[in-house]
Image (cartoon, rainbow, N blue to C red; front, side):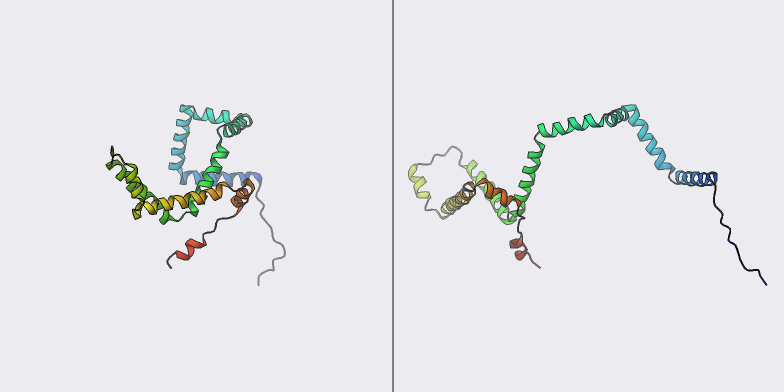
Length: 181
């Protein structure tokens, strides 16, 4: 019969054994990805030859002064204002119905084509007055007047009202209801 186990001996590796095992793992990883390492070393050599590493080293050594210069550039160039205007433009475009935008661009294109065809023609006051009876021209003038009324409502708002509206989230419920299922 076998003897009972009364004491368990643990094998605790020494520092030298741990180092040898770590070195073995590193060497195995290097041998598995030797192509990538050679390619990386080639890139590193080219960066050194072109002076890019020296530039990077200089930037890292002087990171505080480079950071100050970068922030001053951002302020002087007006980037915060530009970024805010870009965000506002994106918000505006997200609120506009794409069908209206397409219709507007097509009408602008058609109007430009027609205006180049009538180059050099003169319109008398009588023709101008009678053209108001034309349903297409009347619709355009009515639309332009409604557009100006809508713009004037926004122009007459106080700055505080506009700031409050800017903080509200846009509602896309109207477009979600129209979306096909």
